[in-house]
Image (cartoon, rainbow, N blue to C red; front, side, top):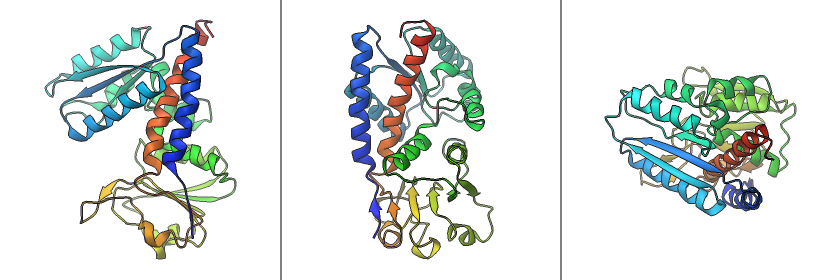
Length: 287
């Protein structure tokens, strides 16, 4: 039976550590501040933004919200981002996705200053990660790496198979795992004979958005299973990409959904905000 990787508990521990760090910064007169931009009225985005606001409040990070109407033009969005780039009181900028279809989100991400890119989405952040330099790492992959660290799961020489190749999760995870000396394989919707890859994985990371897609017969005995998927099953219950109840009998470690990777994503965002704040202040010789 697998050890359950408790993301909720680890996120709580991380937030407590960040709270201490934030209090220290504030004692030095430094007030970390995150700006969040949301365009339109997406219900899921509203929930995510509210959760980020609560996390900031808990840790002591100041929070500023910019709620833009659905019809906002690309020009207005980019102007707001540029203004926030230049505002010395803003340490981190987050553009909540998705945005309305008439907007080009990649152009918007590219406009965010690298120094304030707490989501790790700018080309500068992605490029630095790919060559192993210190940078802002996308929050979900960073949360996964923190889990490996907490549970002493060494990736050196291990076969890591990632299901999914998104810019936000799959691709950054490739680099994160390579930087820990893993042998990485990426599978996706065009991969043939998928099970041939998953059965060989020492570590299987699922991020494809298909409920209970990974079944017991697809995994190797003793594999580490990281489930990043968030889906609703036929009963409306929140489930991951992995058939948790059956796969946990075969795995050595497994993340649940909910309570696994999800809570770590916001904790890592908070970590990135403090990282950005400290680096900006160091450049001004304040820290």
